Amino acid sequence: DAGVTQSPTHLIKTRGQQVTLRCSPKSGHDTVSWYQQALGQGPQFIFQYYEEEERQRGNFPDRFSGHQFPNYSSELNVNALLLGDSALYLCASSLVRSPGHEQYFGPGTRLTVT
Amino acid sequence: EDQVTQSPEALRLQEGESSSLNCSYTVSGLRGLFWYRQDPGKGPEFLFTLYSAGEEKEKERLKATLTKKESFLHITAPKPEDSATYLCAVQAMNSGYSTLTFGKGTMLLVSP
Image (cartoon, rainbow over all chains, first blue to last red; front, top):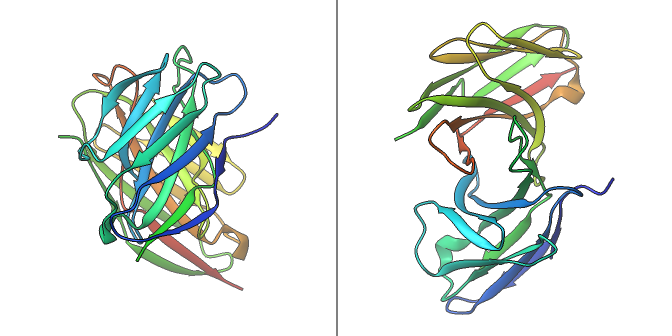
């Protein structure tokens, strides 16, 4: 049973550039959430996708956008990168009808902005 | 606004020395409280979900408990492989499609 997968593992970008991160959810899951984790901090919620629509959004600017595909996989796009966007980006999947709504995380993508 | 505070920020134990980690929370109706373990540079690994005050769950040397304002993660006779950052997160009842609000974590180091 494949868990949550993310690509790429590491990424180095320059300020002002754009980046796309990818996530495949755990088999059987239909909801994908994205989190940003700065060094020494807990993950912060960016947004959540279900049925190919953004359902909830955290306190992140419009430079952060996403997409969910019919196969439930998802992308996170960040435009006009800032140095402060350097972080570990985590994808978590869940099943909306699961009573517990447990979220299972992928290994993350480490983004470095120089 | 939902808030989660974890203490201590860091904890160093000797192998076999039991202790507890604390997670205090404020949330507008708790749907669930989650504990995760995170190794350096990796994604959080799900440990437990607690739903109501008085509930307890165990897994190997770990036991999680929940009250109306806080949760404890008890570590009994820890081993060096228990070294990791332990994250606590809450899920609010009014979060229609369930999002998690995390604390900053407790970094645990267990020395042999």
